[in-house]
Image (tube, rainbow, N blue to C red; front, side):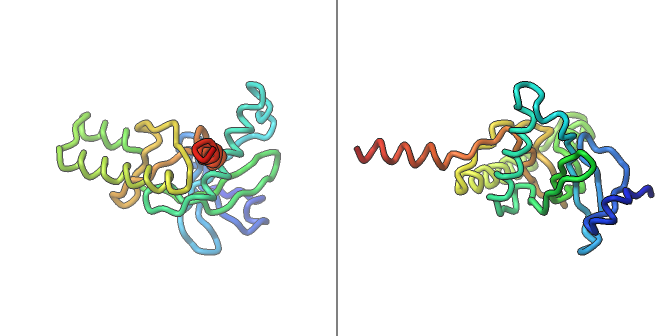
Amino acid sequence: MKQLNSLDQEDIAKCIMQREHEYKKAVNVQTNENVAIKAVAMSTFKNHGGLVGQLHETEKQNMKLINSNYVVRFIDEFQQNKYSYIVMEYCNQGDIEKLWLDKHKHFSEQEAIAYVKQMLKGMQDLQKCYVMHRDIKMKNILLHNDQIKLGDLGFSKSTCQFYAFSITMIIL
């Protein structure tokens, strides 16, 4: 198991250098829990007219707003060695696309109903915090101990200002 010494110095996590899409699986040394770490090179923040940096910041801010059993939990953030990191809950079964492919592109009706109910609960929890996901797809629907977790809030949008504006318009 290879470790990133700089993360040890920060006493945040020992990283297992196993790529899982753009996330790294790690162990939080304080709690001994598995976590996922998303690393984004800060040099890319200005790419595409600043969109990369904006998406990364949006994801961090909106994850902090959510406390739900059906949305991937935000744990921490830090910057180090020219990278910006988001530490989040690790989903031990990967994304639902992987499960669907493992099951030869078939879910039973009961499984599909259970997954859709959990996705709707996650969307409801996002809505309670005035957050729209805006990128729900199989790769962004994760499983942890057979429970659905909505992930990747990079394209999400906080709608607090929109709702405040709407209420103002209705009152007038």
